[in-house]
Image 1 (spheres, helix red, strand yellow):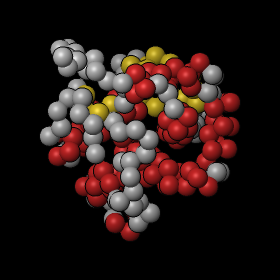
Image 2 (cartoon, helix red, strand yellow):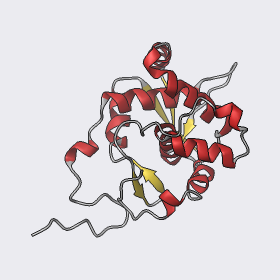
Image 3 (cartoon, rainbow, N blue to C red):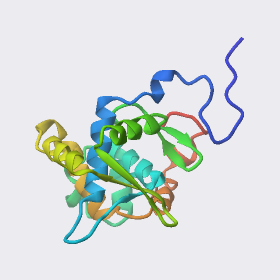
Length: 193
């Protein structure tokens, strides 16, 4: 008898392999770099990446270069500014799934828990915005070391484009992603391509 999917609309199906909920080193490095890019401070200013919705949408665009390119072009970014993004690059890490508010990775809780538990990321409640994430001083140093590693060149390029052009609210980013047929046509819990 086949395993029945969870009937609730807000959670993953019961048949998902447990490995999808575990953090990977690649996911931890990518999210650390993402949080650092969006929480770097200016003079006398503390900055946070605001909320898990924004984190998930930015991570989706970071992982899926083809969709990042399409969203940037739709926002009026000139093609010459995004030459470094190869639309044929495969998505990074494991595929994300379609959940209630768009792309989601079931491992986020474990990845964030690992980063927070090891003192690399700090989390703070933000009035009306859920939680804010920022790198700790130790996490910022580690992110700086990762950025200087050649293997993160493509991720660094995408992060700069995201920060410069798509530092929007999670809801705005969600709306951008809902303009992509691959997102809107996907059923809940379906892997995104």
